[in-house]
Every structure is written in structure tokens, then in C-alpha cells.
Image (cartoon, rainbow, N blue to C red):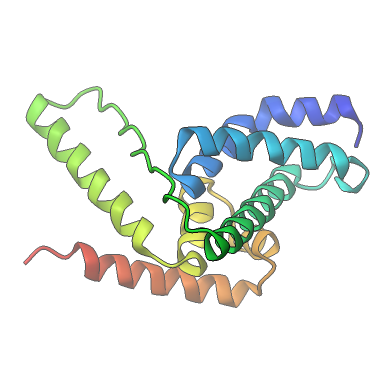
Length: 171
């Protein structure tokens, strides 16, 4: 892949990559940093990216690796010096166009509850949920991004759905 092809990938997949970064970090500022770091790393690995295969999956896997590396560094620093926890911003709820005000408020509250529940999942369950439902990736691509078998992705999605169902059940 060359720089021009990478620019096309940024045009095509940039919003998806940024949205994925937002879901990983819960913070606009951190998501922007992760997004930039992802494409800086992509520039370093330009020769490894195959434009004919699925470059979006490759870029998502770069974002995931960069995010994990940042978390490891933060955890190490926190062990050395107790730092204030990073502030989390709630992601803006999507606007519902044809709902009444009451229905819109109920939908926003429900979306917020689902987001909170997904955030409570551990990373091994949360990441496949984001990749499957938010990015719309097929199971095989999720497996390649996370570097785990396809069956493990299926299992984790099932377990995540069961956990979410239990967390969101209304008595």
C-alpha cells in the first residue's frame, strides 16, 4: 500500500475507526489521540497493509493494539505513582427523528443503560460486542482483529449477550 491508498482508507474508514476509538476510550480527547496514533502506526506499517484485502480490519487491529499498549503504560505508571483516574465522557445519544419527546427520552435512557451495561463487561467480551454490533464486522474478521479463533468469538458474543440480558432485565 502507498500513501495515496492510505489516504483513501482514511476517507472510507476514518469515521468507523474514530467511532471504535470512542467506544474503547469513552473520551473524546483520548479517542482523538488514539485515532491519530493509529494512523501514525499505519504509516509506519504501510508496507504490510494489503489494499486488496480488508484494510479496515487491519486498521481496527492497529487501533486495538495501540489502545492496549496505552493501557499497559497507564497501569504501570499508576502502580508507580497513583494518578487521578481518566475522566469519562458519555457518548452523545443518537437523535431519534420521528419520535415524540417522551419516546425520545425513553429511547435515550434505554441506549444509555445499554452503553453502561456494555462498559461493565470485561475487555474480552466488550471488544467482540463493539466489533460485531458497532463496526458490523463478520466473525472471521473479528477473530483476525483480536487474534483469537472464530469459535472463541462466537462464544464470547454469546456470553456477552447473556451477561447483558441479565444486567438489563427489568423486574
